[in-house]
Length: 179
Image (cartoon, rainbow, N blue to C red; front, side, top):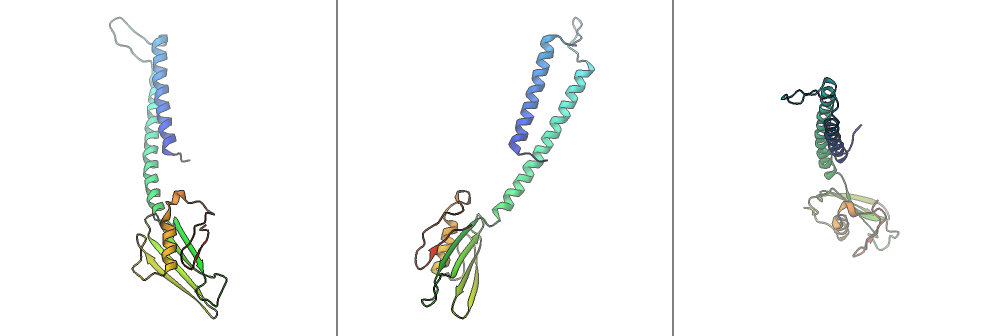
């Protein structure tokens, strides 16, 4: 079972608060405290055992919290490298071929690294091209549709993108949903 870091932090704080509260209640009630004149307060064995168990539990919670924090950092790094930004432009590559079957699709990670894939559909054949993209740009010559697909992908942070939102396109292409 894994819990979020915030949940574990709250559990540790609640556990500490309950321990302090228990000690205060025992001190105020007189409980099983043995006190002789001039001697410091002494805890009986039952209370000492309870406090030792609570201390062990807090130690285990702290270890679990450290493990979760490390796992969370590794997952964040992996997520930054996944495809999170998508831009798609459909268009007619040739005047005599309709249906907007040609497309350029940019598949980028959080930093704008990835690939732009273009499929040119003609009457006799279809050609597919893939060009690398680094930080939202490519060292290869890009068509207007490829540039538009990259622009769409880079336009909004991945957290703000909603499936089904459409964007207007410039030039010959038509922007379509990126899902």
